[in-house]
Image (cartoon, rainbow, N blue to C red):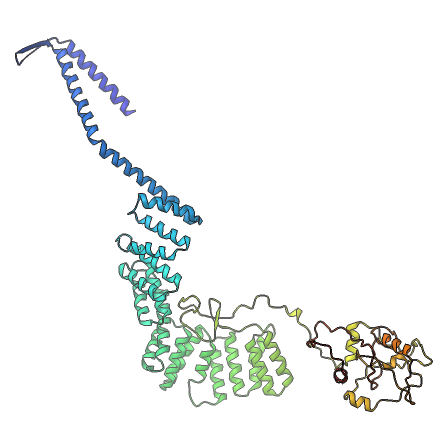
Amino acid sequence: MTRILFFIVLVIAAALGLAWLADRPGTISVEWLGYQIETSAFVGVVTVALFVVALIVIFAIIRYVWTRPAAIAAHMKERKQKQGFDALSRGLVAIGVGDRAQAQRYAGIAQRNLPREPLTALLKAQTAQLKGDDAGARRSFEGMLDNHDTELLGVRGLFLEAKRAGDEGAARLLAQKAVDRNPKLAWGVNALFDLQARAGDWDNALNTLAIARQNGHLDSKAANRRRAVLLTAEARETESFDPSKALILANEALRLAPSLVPASEIAGRLLTSKGEVRAASRQILRTWSLSPHPDLAVAYAFAKPGLSPKDRLKRVEYLAKQTPGDVEGAVAIAQAAVEAQDWDRARDALKPYLEDAPSARICTLMARIEGGSGDKGREREWLARALRAPRDRAWIADGYVSDRWLPVSPVTGVIDAFEWKAPADAIGRPDETLQIDEWTGPPRDASAMMRESLAVPPPVTESEPAPRETEEAAPALDDTVIEGTAEEVSASEPEPAEHPSADDSVESQTPEPVPSPKTSDGTDGATKGDKLETADKATLGDQPGNGGADAKADGPQKTEGAAPALPPRAPDDPGVAPESEDESEVSLERFRSAHIR
């Protein structure tokens, strides 16, 4: 709109100017090189204006022709930059979605169009990583080190490659280089600190922690906690050869983190060794009130040397009063009472924790208490409960359970990762309702258990006469357990009946060939057909009156040619079947004696 108004104003001004010249006639005379030119003022002005316009047009044409090569070059450069940045954008998107082919294609385009662009080197390196070409990625990152603008980018890339390859030494050197180059980079300071802590280089880790705090990478609370952990780790290492330095480090750690249990334990133990019992007790009491722990209870109980078990029990009771209602206090009292053999006091200390689901440690203590009281049955019961009891508190970091405190997690390398807490129960732990109840009744004989497992009808009582195939009925069977071996039973076998039935020849719960009883004159008491009938009746469930397989425990005799009637082995039979079936006299006698008690 402004341009239109300006154009209209310009046209109006030109028209007014021309009209003003036309209203004022005059003559212009020019003499030059022997020529004399005369014209009106209006024509002269128009001629000069046209001449100026012509000069301007000619100058513009000359300038256009002169600047065309540079303009064409600039245009080509601008076009290449546009194509290169477009390739960078599309290549980064392809890397994000995991398209290796497209990422490689756009990386090549960007390399041709923008060879000195830092993002081009990054795209090339990430494309190599996406393809799994670790050597190519390292070459790309190493190429970035030559450029000041991309030096830190190359250092970080090489650091990540070293971490991926598991080269802790190279990763630590690269992290140190990043910190020296720019300590304001949080990743470099944190990475160097973690690597130094994992390697146990506590002094350098403390220096790196100071750098992190100066540059605002950590707040004061977190920095103090980490410093206390590092001091405690160093105190634990120097305790054996320099106790004085270890005590100074432990006291400094407790000043920064009063609830740090390992530092308090070390300080209390070192103060006790120097004879400063009151200082050690005060230090342990202070930490116990913030975080109760069994190690503190032990250190407090033995802080004063020469005490009897009953005196140590009194000290532990005073310690437990500082944290009423905490299970660690009750457990500490129970342990001290067990050492003093005060079983009632130990039982009273653990009584509030026995109703719901006591932990394995409490169940074990109760077993010691009952064993010390002389009740062996209750001791075994508590030991059995300890196997299925919830797990006790322990030092846990990243799912790793340790019996002692560690400054660094062995899984992830994170400092101050261990916590004193109860671990989660195993996934898929069976429900208590699915536990198989133990048999608490009197011992049961083998014949009764086999009848129940095979669902055989019970033996015929006196009111229900058994069917008879011979002149006399088969004697009723009972579940009396026969003591002794098979040889002893055979030696005292009773006289056979005058007309024995086929059921009398069946061994009690012994699935083996049924022999024919001998008569007094040495002849067989049954014919060949009777033997076959006897073998058929030996199978389970054939006779409703004899319980299926029970018979008198007569001493059987081996009869050659009789077909064995062995039942199939139960699926849960723990025995291992032999490669070849042995039916010798010795094996049958062993099988028979295993079922006779």
